[in-house]
Length: 319
Image (cartoon, rainbow, N blue to C red; front, side):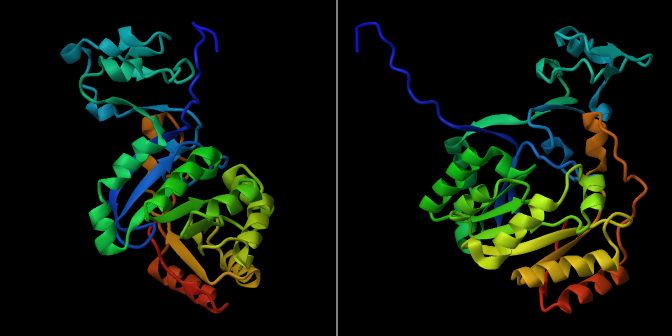
């Protein structure tokens, strides 16, 4: 190496994380920290985390927090390099999403928290530092870390390293996935997973594409591999029950039959709630299921009975 040459250090892998939620009692045993990875190859019409669909940070605008130009002089307007922000007749900031580059300059300028950028580049160590804050609670409750999204496998290398480091630290690990990823990635990452939640949205390929934007062929192919024992971890199949979309008894029967015949033991039904609908407005997205209501207790009981009729253990969860 000659004098003056620069030794390039290998760059540390980073992941795009849109939320880290502590003290969760769902999505795995005990008290858990949920790490939400950005990006998903599906666009489910009922998605309760739409901020995790895109593979880049997104601007969230909470209109009720905008106090108006008469009180704050709207620094966000001047801060936007794209000219995407204008003022309404009432003096409230409004954003042209077609012009917005999600750069975050307006969020930095906003004094009242009306504008924030969802999605942050983090290293494995930075995520672990957050996760480790609650180790005492994990030890006492049998909890740990759950990685979800979005779809975690879209950031395969980062999530693989993260889960590997978690196992080195003797943390219980759970993964939430829709299975729309290379099968080898699923198999490889499962070596560092104690519990896998595997989503199956709909059994009919055409209806699945209509509801999520993609076919279910790869998802079901990977599900067969996962449920037949190719992965060395506990697997729970999840199906969110969305009235008018996938809640027919025929579909749940077909799903339960598929799970049982593939070697699965457990299935969790998640009743729709629609609590994420406000996020769509904040992101400038349309929520197509605004008139959808949660399934009744009677309907959920009928669907549970169908699942159990195939010898599966049914675990009603929280969507």
